[in-house]
Amino acid sequence: MGVTAPATGAPGGTPGVYSNTHYLLLGELLERVTGTTAERYITRNVIERAGLRDTELPTGPHVDGPHSRIYESWFGMIDPPRDYSVYDMSWVGPAASLTSTVTDLNRFYAMLLAGEIVSPSSLAQMQRTVRIASQEGRTIDYGLGLHPMEGADQGAFWGHGGTVWGGGALAMIRADGTRQMAVAVNLQRWNKLDSSGRPGPLPSTRHSRRSTAWRCTADQRECVRYARPPGSARRIGRPP
Image 1 (spheres, helix red, strand yellow):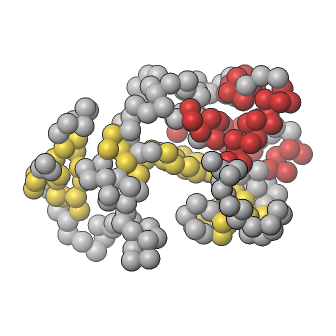
Image 2 (tube, helix red, strand yellow):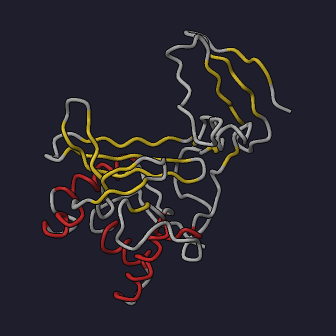
Image 3 (spheres, rainbow, N blue to C red):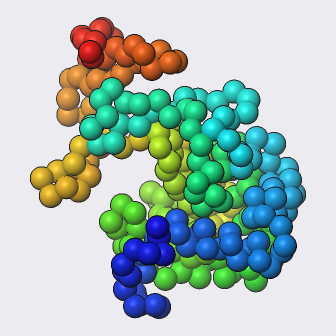
């Protein structure tokens, strides 16, 4: 589907456009060069080499071991949010099917910037950036699987984020390796679309006395919406 879509610009033009299709093509290239699947090569040469104990590229819809459930709101159009905890992401291949933990993500980025995953020259290539349009519609600097971010009074960080149906993660590490963080969320696109069809700002409780959230049973058959004034929680309704 990606290669049959209309071109977004001339090859090499700026800004470029971020797309998972690029990573699918890289996976195909990796298989041609190594003679094995991208999943096997990444598992052997990255995941196992880095000692990532809870990271894998699943071959089916289930995630092994304890894990959080994930829910998709799709800008309020899926109400209540749908449970995507059991979902086969193999259709995107190595572009977005990897599962991990924040502990493993922090370990990976610390080793990457320390030169323990790729050589210093390869890391320098990863950090050589060009301007691209991100999936959020912003123009950012982007390298080879890395992009720089600025932390408040903390200087430059390197990392990456991503989302799938219901789940998302962001991991970053300061350029000098002294600070890092990884965040995972289990509800996606809970903001609304504005009149132009673009995602609006995320709901904030800073200017509101009340926020709401859905609490769902594991099988998604029963969901209850809770209002949350400061310091309390009470049930205010049940969807049909």
